[in-house]
Length: 250
Image (cartoon, rainbow, N blue to C red; front, top):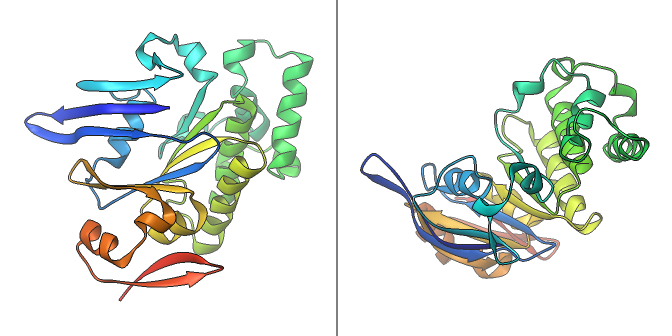
């Protein structure tokens, strides 16, 4: 996926300013930066939930504006921070929703097998007949990830998937993100505020400041004290766990 010259304004304020980068296939890319830096707006433009003022988002050389909605849904799945529109569905009904671009209103035997595998992959068999609003926050996030797996897209976009989760469930969520890439071959794009998670579970990082890209590169290239101090305008101490840099506030 190639992002070229994305620009978005609200009233007279430019919230995304000529953003350009390419997303490597089969990798985890985290978008980081302070509040209001433009991360979620870029995510919204990529998924066509937000209209761009200028620029290009392309799959295999084709502008996403040329894709029909159902065809785009077969290539790209997004989980936003407001996934409560299906709250009155059971887990199985929610996961089946992920097959809609393929099956319409009627699921086939193949669809049912894919749904079964997605539920099993996320270890939700015992919860599949429960309503989503009966689950804990961590279980609910796993159910939405199961829906995404059933959708069977190449690209998965997650807008702050650790939001409102405690450390235990947030860490488990990031391990799931890593598995989506390493075991299922998905290309995952995240918006994250927790830069520790970005450092430990990502392959690439795109750091935003004031609607522009401050740094883009591998974790090792971006997660340095100098870069983080510039991006967040605070001092950082860099530590390592299992050979990966983690950033911790002084």
